[in-house]
Length: 154
Image (tube, rainbow, N blue to C red; front, side):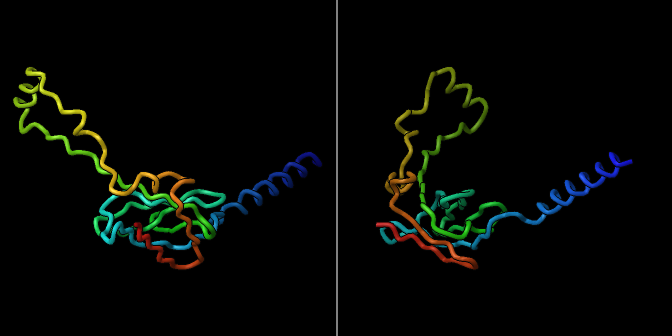
């Protein structure tokens, strides 16, 4: 009987430990929105990423008007409260013309007509240094609650 009693106590303790972790258990976050501009004009696409000293990074897609909203765990939940290194990557890739029909696609395959590799080269909308962690020179502090963090890049 003692063994059964000991097993029940152990099972109860284990259940309490597991249930104790059922809360959010996630670090405190502050909602972060903002706008990215370069030479006074909105950056139309890309990604903003905030890297905390410890924990998961937060990122957000830049919209055509230059605005962004950060997500760490759930859509739009922001970034972990504290100091962050920041990167901003904004690159456009050439749009490859698509054949208008299956016959046109077959025709280009037969003629060996290919897309010029130079046309496929990415075009950086911001200096590439802003996209490299440790080289961007961008840092920001995220506080509890709503944060508006704009980047006016030269």
